[in-house]
Image (cartoon, rainbow, N blue to C red):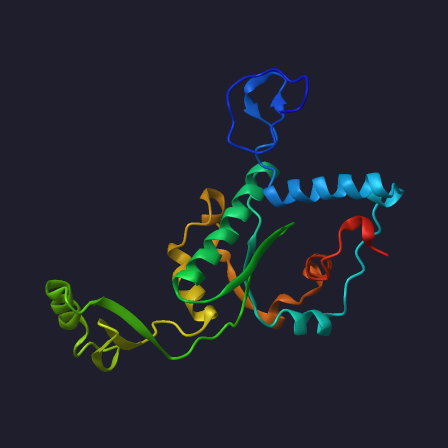
Length: 240
């Protein structure tokens, strides 16, 4: 709580700024945790070396598109028109939407390295992956050998299954089977699952106008400054 603010309801957020006219509302509820961490870092950096760039940072100097394209090879994103809702709502749902993409990709064995979003006339939800492609097959873990009922169900399901490669086998007292992946690229996964994926109430209404973008497709002029800022990792007050 900020010192001197009236105590109202208890809040879950780490940073609380109570609405002066509604003590039950935290006007800082939409503040993302990473933004709060950046603010704390900025405050410490300012105390160590005060300068005007903390308040008036230099504008981002976008990298050339070929450089961005090279750095974005393992990124995948979804682009859609911005819905006509207030910033508090659209930013909150964009953050949720990026998280939903990351969760979907993890559930299908893609290694997620990061997630981000950009809001302007368009909304971009993006995820960084270790790789946008997976091997054609994967090992599926079954029950322990001694659990006969579960083992029988496992064998009944996978013996002769259209996705099974070879026969189920026992390794270290547990059943395993090699199966073909349903999706081997992040792009085909998002194309298939996007219609049923929950991104947020207002973003879901825009999914029929959404596009999946991969790698160099993300390196376009309207996102150049955003990507440069994100990939450089420099805080705003350090731009030169």
